[in-house]
Image 1 (cartoon, rainbow, N blue to C red):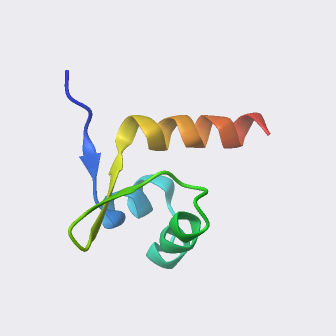
Image 2: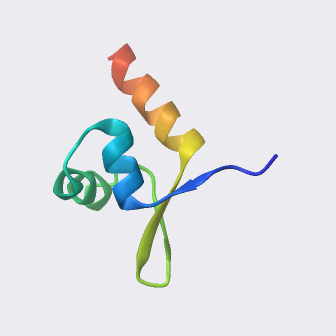
Length: 57
């Protein structure tokens, strides 16, 4: 099964954060992301794992 790919808008909605916060987390390499051209994309499984790690701290 392929991993679901999310946009910045979708990640912001999923985490209930502002897009600005998502960009900041990516720029500090805290939130895993990758680029396709000029666009940021996220693997949903990595976002969920990141969130679970945050809850454990």
